[in-house]
Length: 296
Length: 232
Image (cartoon, rainbow over all chains, first blue to last red; front, side, top):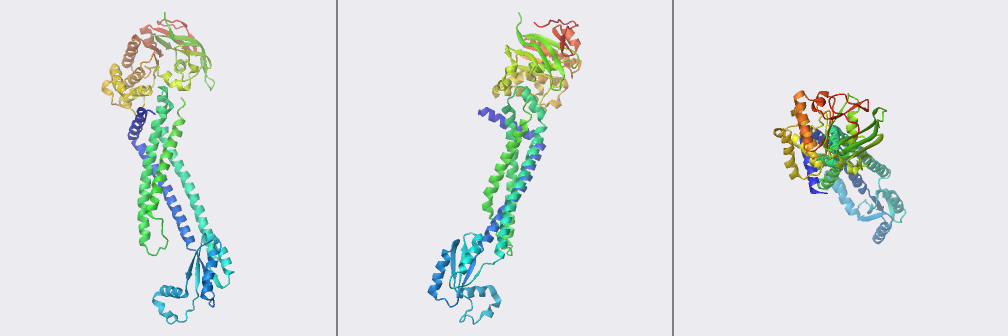
């Protein structure tokens, strides 16, 4: 494409944005608001998925060893547990460590445990980390069948409910993003279409003077891209700033045990995807709206 | 010997809604001539100009421009074709959000002229219509007469071989109308063909140019002082 043509597009687009200041500002505002809402929902979905994963990663199977089992058989049992399908890792927790942990958990009331060091009532245990949380019940069943295993615990009942909850959260997140995505597309398109509608006559006159379609279309599309990207950058900046301060608040509040996705991790996705959305939305809505008035 | 720039052969135009605007019209606009089309409102004057500018296609018959049947102009060549005709409308049709300079420059930009050339030619043509002092004004800041002269400047800046003016004086007072006619005569004198559709018979009769008259879509004998010649 000739440089002169591109230069004219830019000049026309910028002059027109400037002269239709209020119209341009309202269009930018509309893009800003709809992408802000969309971005917010995306962040919410991202965190819901993140929390679900963390919760699932926290699910473990505890295997308690029978008291009478000889030490060499205990390590043998550890190996067998590691071979169960779907087990990603096995950690041995000797009874001394378990008692120490209990003491820590009790804190000020740890005096209750005095004297138990000599006659520790807690069993040795293995902790199995599953490859996937949904495999937990199957792993537990197989572990239970092994000789020397006294008891298997994984939060039966609760885990199943938790899994169906996290799955539901994921589906809801995707659904919300889709709905708000569509709403953003619709809002932006309508706004840009209205701003072009008011210039329908201009398009007709240009065509009467012998303008080619691209002569008319080019500046309009560029204008749409500028509106879309300015709105998107503003939305991304607001979101990023808002998210950072929210994360800071959450991290400062010690009672919250859930960690949100780190701010540095969401920066690129927010800016990248919102900018892409803005540019695409602006260009496509302009092109579609102009197209209707081009046949004179 | 006059040579036909535009020729219409048995042109009939029926719009989609069934209105018959022109019936069997045969006429020509010769190179370098000043031709009036007169007739009451609704006689088909505007349809005639729109057919020559190829905003409409004839239902029957042919429109030939400079030896070429304009119905065969491909959409790609359309832009090039329209640059050869300068249009002046009753309602001016200026872009409201562009300055006088930009409105005139637009015609050159569409023609793909370089910016250097545009900066030279726009002031020239604005000077000619007496509006050099208004380059930075917007159409809404101008009087009707001034707006029509901007529109004329836009039509002239591409140095077209034909200027079509459809009721150009319709919205102007006597003085401004006279000034516009003077400018049209001037460019005609320099060799550009002018086709002016009007129902202002006083103008037609004063100038004594060849005149065609339309009534209910048909060419009829013009009864005024202008000279009427059918066809040629």
